[in-house]
Image (tube, rainbow, N blue to C red; front, side, top):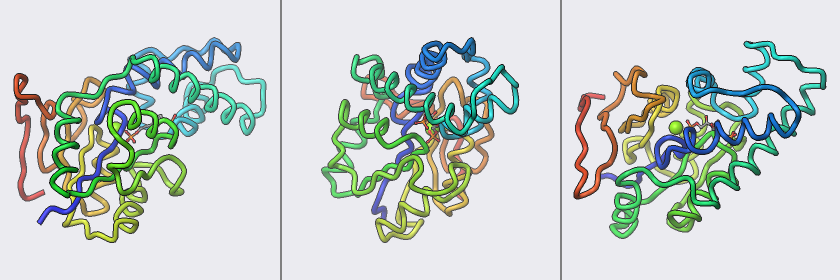
Length: 231
Ligand code: XBP
Ligand code: MG
């Protein structure tokens, strides 16, 4: 029997990448006097690297923008500023939950199904979203950011959640939105439901159990894009 649902945050609970993270990165760059500007198109490619600090590092390596400062100082500073801008965007109400998310989570909680979070985002970001729109107390484990050494697609964060909950992979179901997230969950032997978004709709989801447009509302039913019960 199903014992727990494990949720990714960014792109799954809300369109945080589109409405929050990218904008927050750009605000932090501008504030630091850098002429870097991540377009939606570029950001789609940069999303291959999970983790904000890792993404900035990858951008510098790959696109070689002008950097005069020591990266060991610059990256954490930029990331800290970016987190503040992100929290600001969230508190101003600019980031909504995706369709069906609150309905499913509330229902599962009231039915005694355990809930957990597995995200590569920094903990304050994940907590702020849960506080704004859901309830952090509903979640038995909130695993975020640097709590494990390797970010998705490494399975570390999912293995950490399973360990903390003292559950087997077969007791749980994961909700993700990206190829990297699916890889992480799959390597931890977890079954995964994908809800697509604009950044991830062309990713390879052949390892998913189910691929949906979104989780739906009574007046907005979802379409099943792909299903594979053997996964
Ligand atoms: C989320 C991410 C994160 C966020 C930014 O991936 O890739 O890097 O974009 O987060 P997932 P921080 O949805 O697979 O967890 O800046 O807080 O690191
Ligand atoms: Mg995601």
